[in-house]
Amino acid sequence: MKEQQAKCKTNVMGVKDSMSILSGKWKLHILGTLLMHDKLRFMELQRILGDISAKVLSKELRDLELNQLVIRTELDGAVVAVEYAISPFGITLTPVIQALANWGNTYRKEIIQQMEKNKG
Picture 1: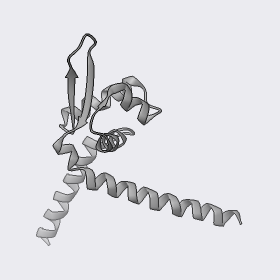
Picture 2 (picture 1 turned 45 degrees about the horizontal axis):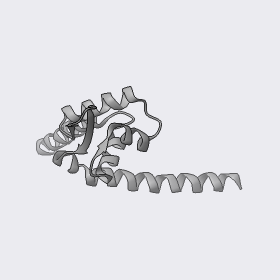
Picture 3 (picture 1 turned 90 degrees about the vertical axis):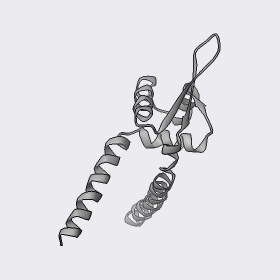
Picture 4 (picture 1 turned 30 degrees about the vertical axis):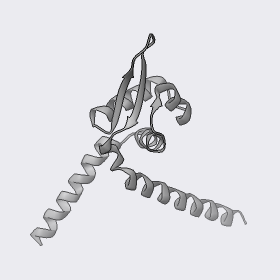
């Protein structure tokens, strides 16, 4: 029984730690987008994500960089340009993000089917 409780406590702690790093409206969107692209500049990323302000995107990218999920690279040139890429540590989230996407797609289909069923 104590072994099971210890395992449960460890799992809960792991989920809590993960959620503290990944929580928020945009972090998983940002990571998923960077997983699909090699590197993106700030404005490219903002355009792909859509309805996100520069201030929010900047904050989320800073958090992801601090947690070593994203790599920020300043490019040489007359104008300061910055590229963002997923880090090796961030790449380890690929199966998690893919599982969430699959779950969301399945759930959305079921909700739409249920709504159509209730109309008729």
